Length: 317
Image 1 (cartoon, one colour):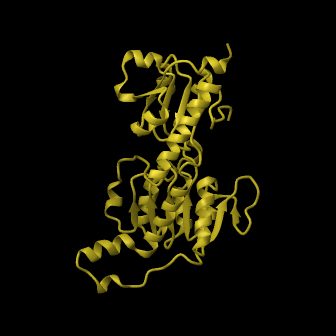
Image 2: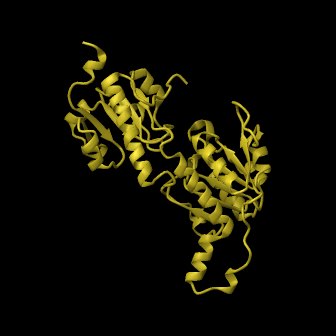
């Protein structure tokens, strides 16, 4: 019997570390039994052949070792930085993800935060509801003609660049490798990119390679009129350096969808009008939820029916 045929037999238990749409799963994925991580019993733990997680939550080597039948670890999004890939490779466990399922809505969110900060939307809303009027009507800057520097010109970064160009911004980007981008200015390091930018947007992966990529030096280079937008991972920014730069007036402001110790919000941010926060939901919309469920099913069927997940992660790198 072929491997593909063997994998097509029987119900597959998938342990889930994230909430899922059970109605969608019952309609489209009846051969998989999705069991919440916190509710798994011993029999299910021993039989579980897949785990669903995401880049922030991840899966450790010790957690993999406690699942003797584990074959596949699936990330519900594009990120997989906290899945221990070395442990998976040593166990012969495949890792897959769901690239480009929420890229557009994350880019939309980044642009919305940029515009909201520039135009003072949150502050104006609070002031107007508090009974102010004339004091709120001072001119606010727009974004046309400003330079957006992008760290991470992947699926999200490319979409954000297109949106920025559509509203009249110039686009610069961090170039580590790859072809030059037409009509966009490359920079070889983050500090130089920040110094040339009015807005610095982070759309790069998380993980050790990008931890505290944005530090005090980068923030000073961005300057007292500059805006930092982070829709990547909280770990990319040195939070203490960011707080100090804002307090000293070395940075104009920050628009953050992600935090380094989320869901904990640094106390300093609560009192700063120049900081806009959202709760790590830039990638969430009804449309992206469907796309992520569909990508999950493609990965599960790809592996358990054909021994090849639809969107594999290269474990050799």
